Length: 156
Image (cartoon, rainbow, N blue to C red; front, side, top):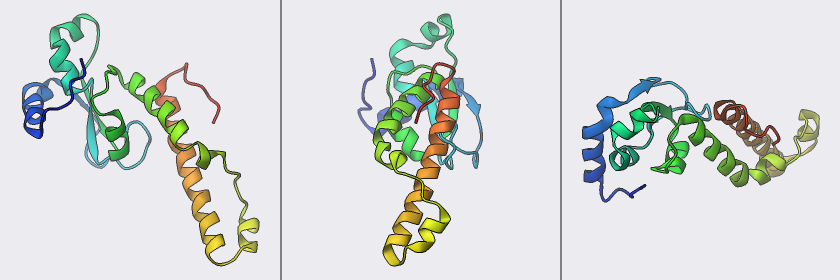
């Protein structure tokens, strides 16, 4: 299971063989289905290599649907061809990963505008940008939490 792509030619072959079976959710210009950032690519759920390994009959018999979802580059890269068969499972994996990756950023205190105004120069710019990145990350995690389903932990 979960073979790594041998080459881009192997991926193209898998895409040619199975892509037409996937139901497309979202279209060009839609945000990432997982985190809400701009969606520049598509994520095959389950991954093409998993469909090749398990076969479409097995997936259908076990109630799995095939989807392509609009996806940002980061989410698509993190997920890759991991053996996660549903959008919810893939969302949970991203949520877990991003909470670890961005822990330091989301754990920082949020500065008020008056506190930022008291600063000057590079420190003011750093704190302001840090606040903005923190807010974006918190929104991304909230989006992932909603996509992951009811048993995803709520705490940040």
